[in-house]
Image (cartoon, rainbow, N blue to C red; front, side):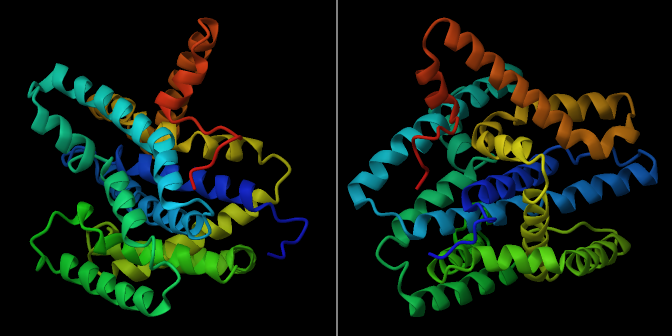
Length: 335
């Protein structure tokens, strides 16, 4: 792989993760009272539209990182026990108990479906399915093209409400973006895409804003499935790649990289903070802070995680705490 000296693939991916995380958190703080002022409803729709970007980006990155793993099948999935399964089930159980304390429903079925289907953690369920499905076929272009076509059909049928399948847990609704990641890695296109999207960032931004305005003028927000969703998602991904390339060229990129490294942990644990901030801001009608909700939630989650890490270090269980929280370590990889 021929990389220019100015392009750090590792740091760039962390910056992309930071923007994807911002999108996912935006989706979970976008609820505003329908009787609130029209501009607040509009801001909520904007947040919901931004919130429809992140999962596609994360699947693309997952496919990209997955393609060239050098581990055997057993080595790969054994590594996922530590880097994905343990933090997934630990943090998911913590979040489930948080919900149970407020709403009840403590039983195995609710616990299992919360961790695997009916929460933001569905992404990990689909991801593990992709790891299994594409293990032997990630180099087979015919299969990738065929599966991409199936994915496009599935997304379209989901948007038309023809498929009677819970859309978030349907792997076909996400396969297109995972396959794009595989192909980008296979043909070594990441740096070229990053530079291209940076070069045309203004135009890509304008197109995305126009798409957003069209949606808002229809009284709806951009979603993963409906109304030319694939086109909107692809332009959104290009926008994230371009912004990440632009930010990677700035002098102060360490914060973006740090946020990217912490993205998995924040993703796992941000929802209680998202619920608190959303309810608090809606109750006191703090509409002028609506667009800042994602940043506030990320900072709160980050602070909480770092406090736990600090205390765990004091009692010398920091290594265990980092595993349970899903904190990225430089000596290991998610691939």
